[in-house]
Image (cartoon, rainbow, N blue to C red; front, side):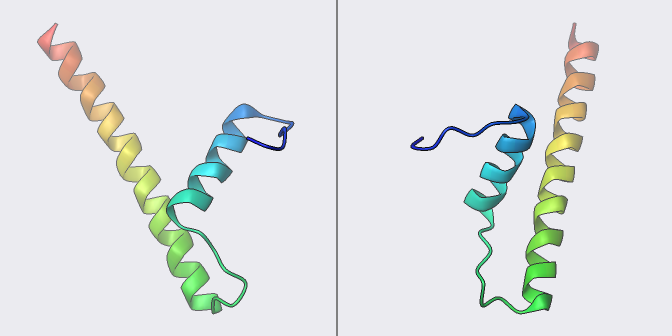
Length: 62
């Protein structure tokens, strides 16, 4: 990384992931921005559910 980012590590990772997966452009319409934001939160929700499901599966397998 060229620039050093200060602040919370988790917040920096969140913004980096968001800009990598679903970049927003200045000429996007409000509905397109809303759709991109909704898609990103759905992605994060599915990832969290997958992590919880994996923890449950590992706990039963152990």
